[in-house]
Image (cartoon, rainbow, N blue to C red):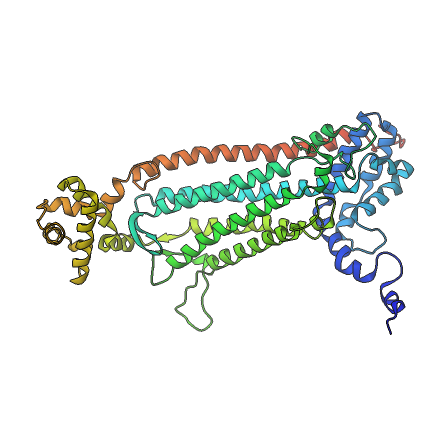
Amino acid sequence: MYNMDSIFEKEGRKFPGATYSEVVLAPAYDHAKQSLLEPMLAVHKAHLIMLVNQGLLQVDEASQIMKGIWALDKEALLQSTYDGQHEDLFFLVESQIMNVAGEAGGSLHLGRSRNDMGVAMYRMVLRDKILVATRALLSFQETLLNVIDTYKETIVLGHTHTQQAQPMTFSHYLLGMYDVVDRDLKRLKAAYDTCNTSPLGAAALTTTGFPIDRNKVAELLGFPKIIKSAYDSIGGADYLGEIATAIHLTFINLGRFAQDLLLWSSQEFSAIRVADPYVQTSSIMPQKRNPVSLEHIRALSSSGIGNAQTVLQMLHNTPYGDINDTEDDLQPYLWKGLHLIDQVFRLTKVVVGTLEVNEALLKRRAQESFATITELADTLFREANIPFRTSHSIASQVVKIAMARGLNATHVTSALVDEAAKAVVGVPLNLPEEVILTAMDPEHFVKIRSLPGGPAPEEMKRAIMEREASLQSQLTLHQTEVARITICVEKLDQLTSQWGKTDEDNQPI
């Protein structure tokens, strides 16, 4: 027979129940003390300054409260474990402030709620982590541009549908990847801008009857603006989804890049060689040289995708309002996802920055490949004054004849083209030998593709310079934003530095 008392004997009859504490409250406390303590104290200080400015608290009351804040032993809080005496870190910190400040300490919470506080703290943590992640992407781009500049004349085969397509350069491929990362940065920056808005002053969800100054608190905490709707301040969760989506796409893109590099580093391709610090050997096969750093980049990217998907799934079909689904259980997945961006892109930077490219082998493959046949078709159109679809058919016939005879692209001659032309149009084209040889030359193929976005070395130089200028601008903006946030945090201490500090007579100064 069911006995409720037996459960209470194990769980206890008062909050919190043992299992609830184990599964929910203790993990949330551990995350909070590591990530939310500093933002919480910053919110306290900003709110306190505003209350004094608005005449809602007197300076002597603020001084008492600041005594409590200054007295907090942050190291002890960081080392503490959840004991159930307080519901969460907020109530523990509040109680410690009030132990020093007395009854005045209770007025620190005037005109606000844990709701708007919590969202503000999450947003502050996330914006810092986004800034770290975006710096890793920018640093990767710096290295990538150096590698691009090194290999801007290195001929390789480009592939479509995994098959040889046309000659290009290694830099042409890498520059495409650079631009993908650039879009990842734009998405993260957009997510940052959405995140970096203040919910403070929304209180529980309807603001407050006290004449607080929402804009002042936002300014003190480095938020450029407030969230206009108090309800949206508390209930809106799309800022979390936007960050998750940016993380998701960033790792999808990086995983595709890592997959290519892994394939090209295989002995069958032998296109690139991963440097010694980033390979491992086998316990049984002495010849093995495993580029496992690339495998870890791919695997960790998949892990980052998983974190992002978890966030989106946790938001799915939840009500638009104040709910725990967006809080303690969800936030760590975003924190880990952003941390992984920093880690994985720093690893990718050093692996890519030390790659060796087998230039001679790749050039020979391009020369022997029929990937240049597009240019032969273009040349026949220009030189023989025939319709392009006809020149395309003749070039196709050239490949068929050559392959049937076991020839590669270096064996294509004017005579072979004439043979193909007779089969297609009934007459030879009689083009000079040097015209055919030039058309089949992969370096020529690349050189004349000098339109914007093309692989020609001169166009590549222009493209690199363009992106270098843009990158320097982005680095400057990033440094400026990091400095701005840092100054705001430091200013909080400056503005409250005289509150709660005492002279030798233990009087407020």
